[in-house]
Image (cartoon, rainbow, N blue to C red; front, side, top):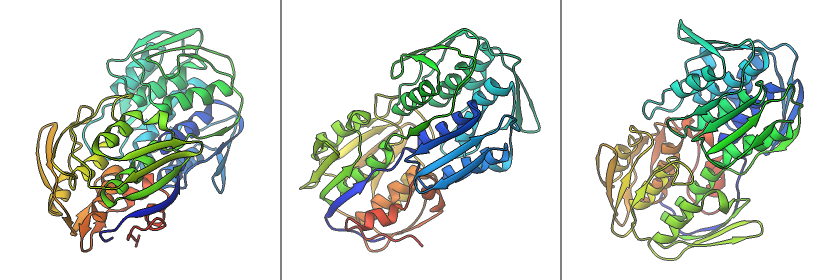
Length: 410
């Protein structure tokens, strides 16, 4: 890719990766065919498809629609060859224990940005009556019947909340999840389970109340738009200038991010079909601090750092979620960014232009942030390990090119 001038045009925001994967896993809870609409055509969805097919599920994709036919008998094994490619695979644990009472799931892999232990997943499920053993790199879970309980999460973990939510909908009695994650993807999962026949109260709050039912039914459901994809395009606009209309973007899902971009000088306006965004002058630096939702998402941070590298002034960036999520900074420094990092903090002092260089993507969002940085660099930037980007984006290069960016995927 090369440094690009003002962007101009319309981009449609696709279905949320972090929601679609969990809805696919949740389909295991009901025998029959569940249909999901607005499912992005990305590598992570393909991996989840392979994982469910390995369990005996039949899946057919037609455009943005995915039909998931779940048989009565499921093979409750999630093999290492698939799980190590995507951390989100761990969310099959809850539905398998709830539906058939047993599961064997390999310890998860996924993005390389620090330790993300699954202790909270297992401890919460144990409180519902599951038992676990570890051998040969696998987690073996059993539960004759899950029993509702009150579970308090030490941290509002998205994955743990999702696993507990999917497990408790078929548990006997009432489950209360305190300090639950509040992300829009959690609400989407709760709405999906409710349409299947689940009884859930408190979606979008830190206290979820789930009254277990005996059986769920398959449904047709539309996945929410991807707020992180929208954030990616906004950061591209931040470094290139111009104007974009993001069709389908949900302002209510990313209020804190939009406030931050407005603080930096971006002009934003919600309309009936999405979000209009405009950048006229060089943006002004601002401080950034990640927090659990509704705070500023850690997934947004690499894009904001990329925007700060060419903003006017200096900004302090603090990572409060994942300690190891600054690895991409070395790549930005190779491109001429002025960044000083220590522990969970980094100071970014903006320069007028970056300089194109060969760089490496360490994970999905870091890779996309390097694409953004490349749009603000003189000369050519080549990103290796770009397969990470494909895990979370459907034709990112093509979409950016359609609004004037100089970027190609080889």
